[in-house]
Length: 272
Length: 305
Image 1: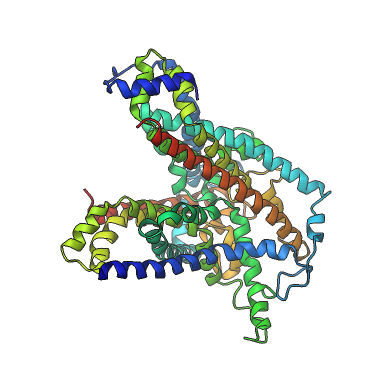
Image 2 (image 1 turned 135 degrees about the vertical axis):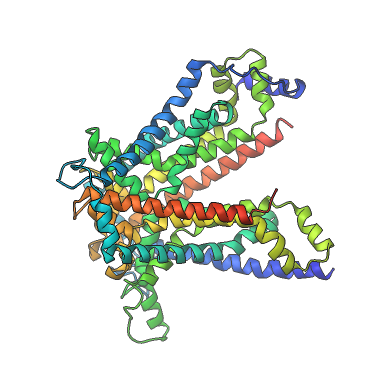
């Protein structure tokens, strides 16, 4: 009995610690929305009163809306590419039974072990060599690379959670590889596909370190923010913009998480 | 879900798994499925990294791929004390960040694995959520916290703790460490949690049945078994921090220039791409050493069989 009481009190202290940790994690980030409503050019206490002026400055700014459009287009294309690669790479890794597929899967997760600055400069050299130069296509290539480890990990764990017997049954019933993949395995992992797509979209949408090297004359949203940080006058505008971006990120990431968990739960329950 | 999937699922419960013939996968299907990943991995990753290594051995003549074949770039890195200082500083900062991140994340992962109960999924979601928010914004948040007329200074003056704002927060290596530790905090929890969560509960029961106190069983059962997760967490925090150039630029000031800053400037203002490539190769070698050390440590501590 004494050990149980002991672990309970341990749990309580740990619980407090986790709470403090969450505060540390979120407090600095939540200051951005707080001061974005503050009627002062400086992010400092005491608060000067409520205003929506900084949000109004976001409207009708052509550079900003251009950057937003760029970020959205690049994000969707890069996420599609990264998700396609994530699906095929992890599927072949699990079912391809070839050393090549395993190698590709291992290399696809390699970018985790390369700092962003090196990914950025290596792609800068590459796109200059093949004549693309810094451009939106180059950014898409860079973001496919940055998002690839995430999509591979998400899809791989999803495919691995589908019981082997399902795929084997489909093949035994005479389905071709392609039919098995398209009509059995892909529908069964649809929530993970959507989740991988949303997460890689977020990665691309928020990415700064690599895009810094690959952007030509048309900036993405993070590059626009970076360019504005030099001017103390535009800090409140950056905070208003940051608040919008944070809100959107929270919503997309939340939906992706829910999808991923729901998908896994269904896969575990159904086949039994 | 397709009807085929349903039929296949029904079948799967009836038909026992039968080993499939080895080469049933059609070559066309295999080729089509390997193509996208193969292009990206071999062309965008391996070929691009190969270009960096190639460029590192060239001289700078302003052209894209440089000229000649030389080891001069590496000689400069090895002989100029500036690069030793900056490399050492990057290693110390990244090391401190890694240590701080892993040490603070471990109790959280432990709570998630053993005490969270029904709140586990919610907490897991809350600690991973910042991972998906803009890195630039997280760093920017620290800039407004630490600035001369920023949040921390003004809050202290408001509360009467001190009278004059201090410059001591911003533009110090300490600011870089705190900001990076905060920015990469979510990276560390998940690997440790996964390692802790896979420890069989029977192991803990066995330890306590054999008379181990909670502390002993933590030190001799839980900690060694979670070492693979701790090492993985350390790697995923160390790698991006050692090459970071954004945080030093935002909150670090000139005294906290890191190796990533130098690489970035070689491809920007300084415009010496071969030298920047050589610096990148050095960073990759350092990371390779760290990975090998972590591998070795994993083998030593990884008592799991």
